[in-house]
Amino acid sequence: MKNNQLTDSGQLRHFLTIEGLKKPLLTEIMDRAEQFSGITHRQVKKVPILRGKTIVNLFFENSTRTRSTFELAAKRLSADVMNFNISTSATSKGESLLDTLHNLESMHTDMFVVRHNQSGAAEFIAQHVAPHVSVINAGDGCHAHPTQAMLDMFTIRRHKQEFHHLRVAIVGDILHSRVARSQIQALATLGVGEIRVIGPKTLLPADCQTLGVHVYHDMEAGLEGVDVIIMLRLQLERMQGALLPSAREYFHCFGLTEDKLKLAKPDAIVMHPGPINRGVEIASSVADGPQSVILEQVTHGIAIRMAVMSMALGAQSEQHEISA
Ligand code: CP
Image (cartoon, rainbow, N blue to C red; front, side, top):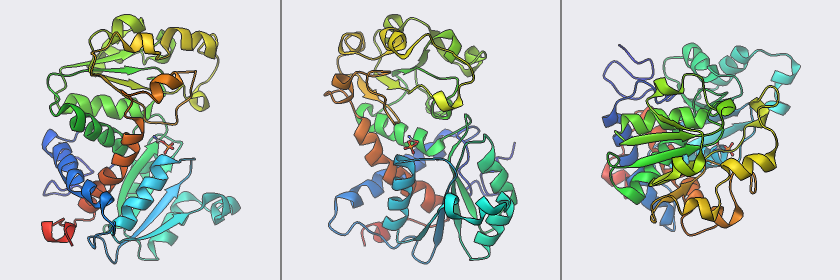
């Protein structure tokens, strides 16, 4: 079946979801990010790969990490970047989303990086843009956050090298998490040995078993012998009704503490896409502890986003350009 994110020759055009993408493409994104990650440590953190291209950050929902790292990634590729401010735009005067897009397109822009609180928003935009414009999903509702999943896979590969022998546990509010959905798809595609999800029944999707994961409602049992722990925050902004007794009770049952971390393998890494809520899903001593790679994930977001943007705009990251 044709994937509408890919060109007829199988190249990335849009990046909307991990679903339907094959292992070689995910590996290519990580390999290219590996090449780009060295640029961050140079005195001049720039390569001319996207010189002359214009990228628009369209964030209809708040963000710290994703928006900043997309902007930095575009600038490091020498693209021109426009951060479109929704709150001061004509959207607030009643202009429709499509009219806004067509106006931005008429400025000869090449890429929209979109975050929206509605699932499917990035795909909708991708269906309506001009043929030369690429759309990158920077998180849509509960649906997908594909670049977050890829930077997480990159971080895991950096620490563990191979995927097939790993046991990975994702803990917390899976039900409302676009990150978890994309991570599960990426982990499965990369051939991870065992994917576990851990959380209260009210925060796990009803069709969890169909995702090919092992479900745990007991955190101690779920963490036993895992190589990677991915903690998620409670996404209160997407919850309807009271799904939890209290934050205190939640931390007692599903918060990651130093004692619970001891149940995982001694060299297990602790991840979190952010923003973290200390004392709700993770203890400060763990978030700031030696097994935490949380800030490393943020750093890797730049290289992964450079990789995705350069691939979607068809730029060939020839070695001489990267080393320029
Ligand atoms: N992980 C993530 O999406 O964080 P932001 O909401 O700060 O972008």
